[in-house]
Image (cartoon, rainbow, N blue to C red; front, side):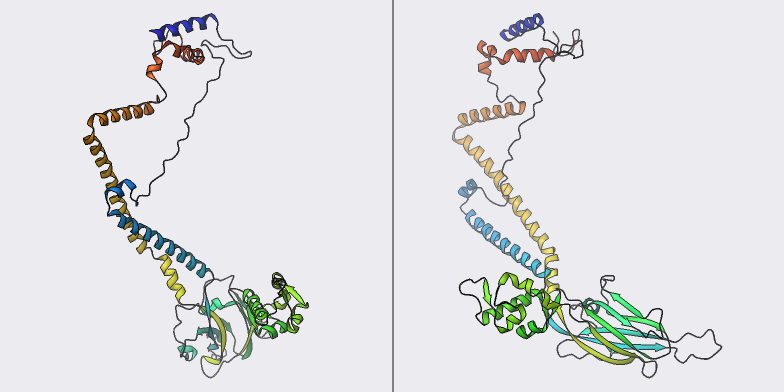
Length: 438
């Protein structure tokens, strides 16, 4: 009754002193509050920290002494997972720059021919004479010597294919016989699909010498050393990091490092020919050796196109040292790609998590009934109080105090007048029978 009377009194005051409408604002039948209605947004709640599903709570561990063994197993599993993660990262890094070993690549160059005897005049239906030049190669296995080109052993699937060892292959034909297209060029960048070899077919019945130019494809890139640097290191072709490492080993073996400033090293007579200085800073080595490095020279071969005698006609075979990745690389790729073991582990983890959830649920039930059995009255009162607090929170009335609202001084606070004005402004127009009408 007090509240209702206070509202009526505030309504009377509000009708006597209507709120001023701001100048320029449109008139309306409904009373508009001079105050802007605030849009209240709920405060962001802190996310409750999720308990690891596979770990046992301390309260469960206190009830079950046997859980200490399970905790030890979890710790051991975490260490194993950390070790496996480190090894997986190491494997991934190793696959980016796989270790290689040097093997011999044997290159076969030969040609075959057909229809060389079909030279009967006046027979337009006869097939024209042709020849085919073939370049193939195989990695020599230890203790195995491949046979003739027509009977070359099957390539090892663990080794890269023949074309992957070359960046560019150029075959130069006799310009007098083939003036329109004397060059035949194959580039790895244009046809990245690996090939077992190369072949080209042309019409012709005249023998000539074809020139073959093979540019090696080194991964990582290799360089040819200058004569001065080659005399120091004894290396002819190598990658830049290994050249720098060889210089470091040369300095270390001859104790050329400056004792007063370890970042410098003294140059002996051989190094002075390379760098042209008496001492040099280690960080400048990479820059200083740049003009001593050049692209490796291509391999030049010559093959005479034979159109008589044995078919195919074999000229020669050539051996080249190439870098071949370790065969274990494929096993490492299979290890990373094998998801069957991961699925099995995930299934076990799900079963363990389900069991842990059941244990926590039984622990909560045990605590509930144990508290009720020890002191039923206090337990029920505490439960009712907790439920009432939860109900207020759900209803949005967690800050209300019913005992304080029963007193008159609660409605004499400064915010009450503003609250009543806001309440009256939200009422529907006069004559409405909707909710909130008087």
